[in-house]
Amino acid sequence: MLKKESFLVGRIKSIGFAFKGAYHLIRREDSVKVQFVIGIIMTIAGFYFELSTTEWMIQILVIALIMAIEGINTAIEEITDFIHPEFHNKIGLIKDIGAGAVFIFAIAALIVGLIIYLPKIF
Image 1 (spheres, helix red, strand yellow):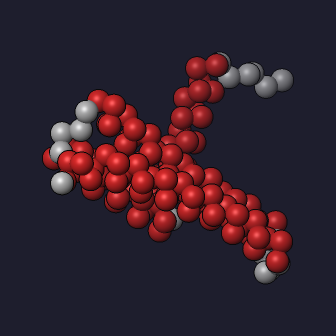
Image 2 (cartoon, one colour):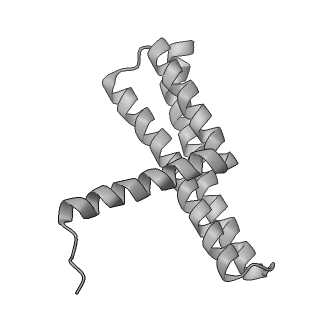
């Protein structure tokens, strides 16, 4: 009979898996690399323009969300490629919808960035 691991050990392992997934995304996925670099640039800009606490919270959430959505889109692409490695119209549609979700949020992130930074620049 296998001994069940403790709750704490299970959570620590889960954090390890999540860290491994985030590391994989940042190291191997070009779209996430781009978003990561943009996030660093925006963080530097935030210090330069002395963002308010509210602006920082919004900026951090937007950066985290765009990277998370990119990660979900990558997972969708990996699953569809695993299930159906050959080209298929339905798989293409599924991938396009995932990319569309990233695009919609990227536009929203750009607008949020403009709302925060345009008044500070001009």
